[in-house]
Length: 301
Image (cartoon, rainbow, N blue to C red; front, side, top):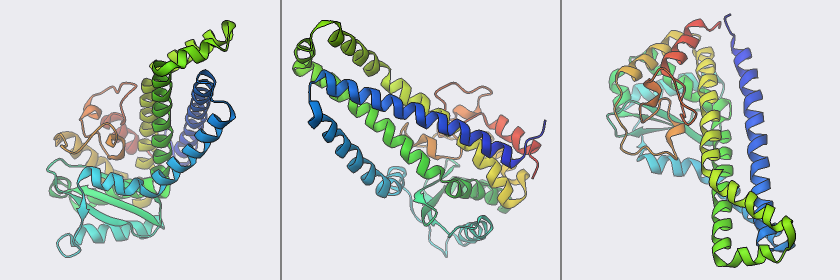
């Protein structure tokens, strides 16, 4: 059965909503357990509420700067990279969004990413290696994929996911340190089986928190890649351009020196080459390239 763009958008929105709800519940439970075990009372809840607000505001307004700095990207000179600027501008017009800032990553590994909190404050970055191997139609496909991330607010979504994930890890650390510095005695003073149950829940959550964060981030990232492929193909009306670009990315893999687990989900293809495998595991941030190409070739525009 051939899928159209709107089928993919609807399916991905449903899955993303479920992921966000589950992650938020997990964060709330972990926060409750930490405050109760450490016996911080109402002041503890107020502290965490204020901390979460400040943390999210800082990350919201600086996520793009963090991504650009972490990848070593620099502004693309309009004269030196004239074709890139032209392609970005024409694809932005087709997508109906403002032209994002354009950056270059000095890396021979072909790749690209988009970042920013909204279409009015967005950036697109490509590596020098990508520009060397892509023709104009393929470059349009790559840029359209990144524009789709911007237009679909995927960049904001992944910022939210990163924020929630970071908060879960921070709460886990609060719990473990609290236990080390006398939290166990405080929990024991709660008395009976209630304190013991809370302690057990806290220990279990502390153990599985990093795995849970990695699973949620990877699952959302994979779904958004499929959606950005479909949306990018809709923008250019030429799915084969992006399909050909993905095939080149598969054949021209090189490891990226500035890539890390914290920014791997940003890129159009896995900077670690994991999406070159036929089957992705639960922790993969990208679906297999072959499956993405297959979906693009079967897409109805």
